Length: 212
View 1: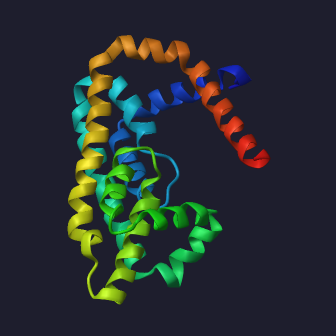
View 2: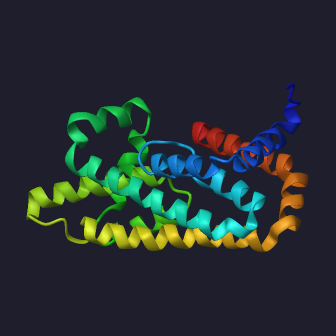
């Protein structure tokens, strides 16, 4: 199928809607949500939003699936950072060009801001894999220094992450389910404008960083 450049985002949106109606859509959502919290770059919202639009009556069920599988992935990411960062994960982070983000996140994980950053990563579009792995790394370093992971232990990481992920995905599912057909029509109408506007903002940001 030939896709016009200006209609690129409409084409992608239609593909997401079709995928959301697939009999195995919930499994696709599980895989995406889990992997995104470990290494995958595509956030679960890309699957969750179209699925909620396609079947508003299942929106909260999809939100639950997203929260649970995302949390399982986050725990996996935490322990990858905690147990095997130096042998393997460090090289992978360098390979995928995530070193700057990792070092920035490491700087945020002080005793004062650690828990806040876990919540921020869970609730906002900040790549959660970076937060999960970094939290595990900093916790392991804290154990070596002081004998305790403190506020970055897995027993704090899990409930804080659960609250952040739960709020994010349930609010998203609720808003989409509430908007229903009206929201779906609005998205179809303006998706290309929104998509290219976001691309434009990214280009401006990159140029600003290069120049200044």
